Amino acid sequence: MSDFASQLVAAGAFTLIAAAIAGATYVLTRWNNYKTLSAKYRDRLYELNKLGVQYGDVAYEYLNPANFTGSYFTRLSGVPAGATAAALAGLQLAARVRSYVFFRLNFYEELFYATESRHVVVEDRAIWRAYLETQLRHPLVRELLTLERQRFGVRFVAFAGL
Image (cartoon, rainbow, N blue to C red; front, top):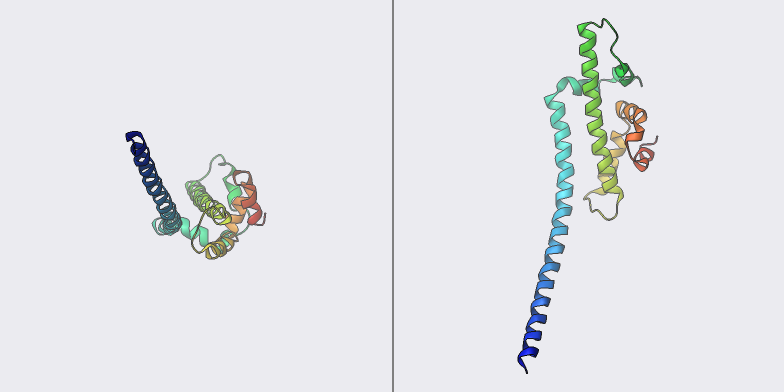
């Protein structure tokens, strides 16, 4: 066999080895990404729970049934002239609750699209979907989603039943 032929065989063997390593790396990376994605959602849920502990007043407002009137966020449309300090404090709290609910909605939307896609592997897809259905029934979530539906994807809003 000539030098050229032996170099060609060696190059082919090297290419096959490199392709095998690349393929194995691809498979392992995709598997790791799937595991990381599921862990990401658990971490995000942990962050939501941690916010409730850190900001107890916001969590109380979010969970207080007295606020489930359907018009909790409409009072944020403006500050009346001559508002008292207590009224301003109430508006500030409502604005913080609004931000908290937006944070939750952003998480819910991201989780919805991840669980909807068959190209993304999410462990316990049915459990996450049941969690979403439950959380999207919260009155403050529904109120803000109704007011700000243009900020969210059409399929997500439809899934929420709006």
